[in-house]
Structures are given as C-alpha cells and as structure tokens.
Amino acid sequence: MALKTLSAEKAAALDKELMSDGAFSLDQLMELAGLSVSQAVYKFHPPGKGKKVLVACGPGNNGGDGLVAARHLKMYGYEPTMYYPKRPKNELYERLTKQLQDFEIAFTEDFPSALKSTDLVVDAIFGFSFSGAVREPFAEVIEAMETTKTPVLAVDAPSSWNIGSGPPESGPGKNFQPNALISLTAAKPLVKWYKGRHFVGGRFLSKAMAEKYDLDAPAYQGVDQIVEVPLQDQKL
Image (cartoon, rainbow, N blue to C red; front, side, top):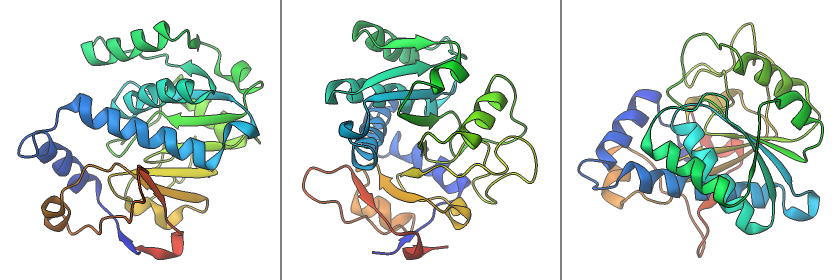
C-alpha cells in the first residue's frame, strides 16, 4: 500500500491532538514508538547477526524512543549500550534511564570507542522537530555514523536531516545514509532522499484520526507494530 507523508508541522499537530482529544499520554506514545523501533531492529538485524547494539539518544522525544527501544531489545536477548550525553532533568526521561540501569544496561560516554565493538547502531538523536545547526557532541557522532561500515538504523529521521528537504548541504550528515529507517506514525517528506530499507511503525492511530490527517493506515499484520514499505510506494 502506498503511504502518504506527513510534514513536520502536521506531525507536531497530530502528536498534540493525540495527547488531547486522543487521550494518550506522552508515556504511552513513547512506549508504543519505542516498541516499534525495537521490532524494526529485530526485523532488520535479528540477534543472529550480532547482539551488540549501540543506541545513541538525543535529549528530546526521539532519544526517549531510543531509551524505550533499548529496554525491549534487552528483553529480546540483545546487548544494548547507551550513549546518552545530554540528559534532561525531566521525570519521564529519568524514569526511563532508571529502568535501563535496573536492567543492567551499560552506558558509555565514548561513542567512537563503543562503535568499534558494536554490531548495529540505533540513531535516536534527532527526530521530526530538529532544525538548525548540529552541535557537539552530536556533530562528531553523526560524522562517525556517516562513515562507519557498521549498519545504522535511524529513528524517524537520519539525524541532521531536515524533515522537509532531506540531508544538509554541508556539515555533519551531508552524506549520511542509514541502512534502515523507522518512520513513526507516518513517513516524512525526507524519504524522497532516502535509499535504504524503510519501516513504518506506531500502531495507535484511529481510523478517524488517520482520515483527518489524510494518512493511509499501514497494513499491520497480526501483533506486528511495524510494516516494511518499499520506497517506490511512497506518495511524496
């Protein structure tokens, strides 16, 4: 099924409506998004290909999705390591971090070194609300993901990309092409410039909400929280 894309403005409006008229809490949406990310990892890179997963998390909701995904990955039998250098003083993120610590999931402050010994990277640094210049320490991290031969799965957007216009013209991320991308709720216009495997996840839209935002509901199967969508099937 062809899936329509959702602009950054409409994605923000949809999230706001889900947490008002839709009666979802941020915790619920983040848990469902992180579960989708974990399933995309399992589909793209099953444990038999290597269990060590390096999860790079930013300070916002995209990073929160990465925190949730890591907990699920631990339960699936992976060995996640967290890179989470900018931790907001926010109860939700503090609780998610505590959960990972209770599961004895390792944290690292040295992304380049951790990258050398991992089997997969999850890019959960910046999502659809990102704009402006990439600052350290994330510029170095994005440059490392850009050049590594280790497979990378990006959450909602390759970090540094503009949601509407794709990769930046210069600087970190100019040539960043993750091997896989999991779009949350709906694909964003940036998929026009994306060349890897593409999944859509986030199984929480009602029929009425999908119709209001002119979205085609993915054909989720059984208990799956994700659907793989060939890029040529996107309506840009």
